[in-house]
Structures are given as C-alpha cells and as structure tokens.
Length: 172
Image 1 (cartoon, rainbow, N blue to C red):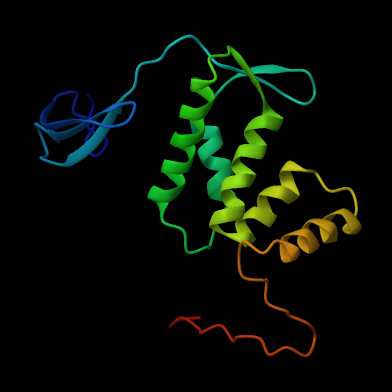
Image 2 (cartoon, rainbow, N blue to C red):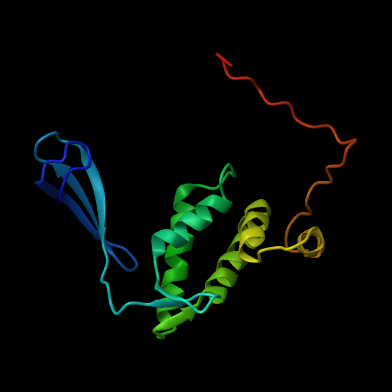
C-alpha cells in the first residue's frame, strides 16, 4: 500500500480488525513512519442505480457520502456519523439482493435518516433531491416538517427576531 504522505510503496500492517462489511487495517509507512488506516471490502457484482432520466450507473458509495456531507455542511454532525449512515444505506441496498435500485429509493433512505438526525440537513438534501420548482413546494416541506411531532419544532426567525452576531476572527 502506497503511503499517502511520502508516496513510498511499502507499508507494514500493525493491526487488522473485522468491521461490519470490511477489514480495517492500521498501517505504518516503512520509510517515513506515518500511520494510516485502510479498509478492504469485498466487491461483488456491480450494483446499478436507475436514475430519474433513465440512465444507469454503478452505485458509488463515495458519491452517496459526498451528497450527505454537502447536506450536513456546517452542521454539528461528526464525520463518523455520516460515514456510518452511508455504510448502513449501502448495506441495506445490498441486502435487497437486487442488481438494480432506483435513485428515488436511495434518496428516500437518505431523507428518512437525515430527518431524524438534523432538520437543516434534511431540508438541504430535500431541496436538491426533490428539485423544488417553486417556493410553495419548499414551504410545504418545511410546514410538514414543523407539523411532524417526532422532533422539536424549527425556531421562528422572522424579521423582528434577534440574530446572533458572528464573532470576527483575528485578522479579519
């Protein structure tokens, strides 16, 4: 395994552990001594995603993770929670045992999880996933979210509500 720090082609494995659907290996570069982690996963037959425009493409967990990360940007959500969410979604899709899954199904799975995790991230993801064409459809989703009693309601921020001032960083 090539070291990401110095590019040396040799590293030694210092620890190996099995995770849910992978093998986690802790490695150390033989040249610079930097330690890093790799994951090995069995890659079975390609899982295809049926897009809304009738295209088909191979399932890409990194693409899924990236979409979730964008929705969760600047939210108090640890990176490991996002990684675990993507892993759980992939595992659930693979358990279906189908060679193809629709992007709508994947999007609904992400939205269900984000709705329970963080409402702002949910709204961000929904705005891209549902491709709102007008403000009314966006307002409808926010209203439905407010009426959902499973979480605290969204704060009312109107023109009269006080807003928090951002702290200036030194040198700005």
